[in-house]
Image (cartoon, one colour):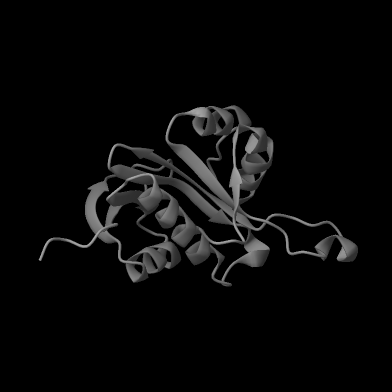
Length: 158
């Protein structure tokens, strides 16, 4: 796992819910975050503030990813980077950390859903080896489709 990422648990639920509110039209509440992170197989990673930032003003985490593993499958449940910190490779770093953790937990495949109109996220996932394997029509509250994507975490048999 990347040494710059910190694990999160139920105690971080209020922080994560506040960040989620900033980034999503339909945010998850603190209780949902706490319950999710208390489930077996659930894990989260946080991009912390940079060292020494406090001297320049309030220090804020930059983003997080929440996932879960069940058997040999893992799923990204949510991934975000706060607006001031986007386009710096942090989402890619979070995804890499989540992939490492999923592999360590025995997962051989990782799934995620992404809004069909989220071009930047879709480009990131495609560049990281995810392929679209399904679609959930009008899944999101704004009637946008959710694309289901998958990435193998082990090499396929030759």
